[in-house]
Amino acid sequence: MNLQNYVDSEEPQQINNYAIFSRLMSYFIKRLGILFIVLIAVSMLTFSVTRFAGTPLYAAIGVYSSKEMIKERKEQMGLNKPLWEQYTNYVTGLANGNLGSSRRTFAPVKDEIGDRLPATAELVIFAVGLSILWAVPLGAIAAFKPHGWADRLGSILSQFGVSVPSFWLGLLFIYIFYYILGAFPAPFGRLGGSAPPSFVTGLYSIDALISGDLTLFLETLRYIAMPAITLSFTSSPPIFSVTRSAVSNVLGSQFVEAARSYGIPSRVIKFRHIAPNAAPPIINIVAMTFGYMIGGAVLVEVVFSWPGIGTYAVQAMDFSDYDPVLGVVLLSATIYVVIYFLVDLVQVLLDPRLRE
Image 1: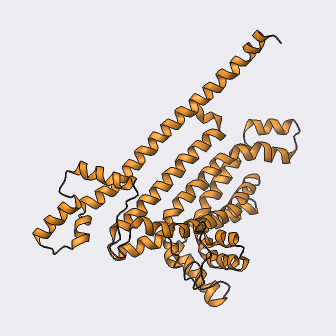
Image 2: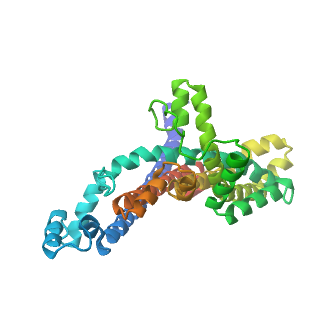
């Protein structure tokens, strides 16, 4: 092949790669803009709550303070400035990690949330992991064999998870597995009165493995089992439904029928054709469920005295301590929209049709 023929053969490929890269960058910029708008909307919502409800001032000095004290504190807190300037200062503080301070403990909200976030993250990871273990295989089997045992069992478990309140299910588990059977320890935190492992990630199970303490690792599993199983019942129904629907849609596609007509083995069709094409919506719902559960595990955390950000927010509300509550809301919303943004990008990489 001479030089001219080589150049002619390479140019279409280079143009095609450039077009794909341009579409990916355009999609990325659009989604980044949406992410920015959503975060601004969340910040405006929390700002409105703190300003129009009068919470920053009266939470600090009380509702029976004198006019002189109210005026003085307004100046100290910057509440006498125009709203746009107050909002600018508020967003600047958020960008610098300033979420305010707790009235109850006088500690920075950022530090207190940082101490409790690993507990919530560990609980959600275990709960979503348990949901994936049964909901994805059961949903796939239900799609291959509609109205079979997997379809019936998955539908029953999904309806049970949707209809039964998580706090009631948690109390039921405590009554059966702790009070009656004694199979699990008392629901008092992550390790009861035991000393936690040396801090590495903040996830006790992982830190116990890193330190090589197998006994402590098994103990962490015993404490997290009941709340994780309880939470998995609420996170598994959408995963089961989306898996069954995604696999069913791919099974009815023309390329699967064509593969069967060519005599390709069923095992190859399942793992090389059906699984990759059904994966994007399943990945999407798993990630969305994880993001939602970060802020949606409140009731389960309270029932099991789990020291996560949900319990922290409830304790703050009991004392009308607004900064911690708003800090948890901001963090939960930010995690959710960031996960949504990342999943959106993964979807584009997995499905070329979305780049058009």
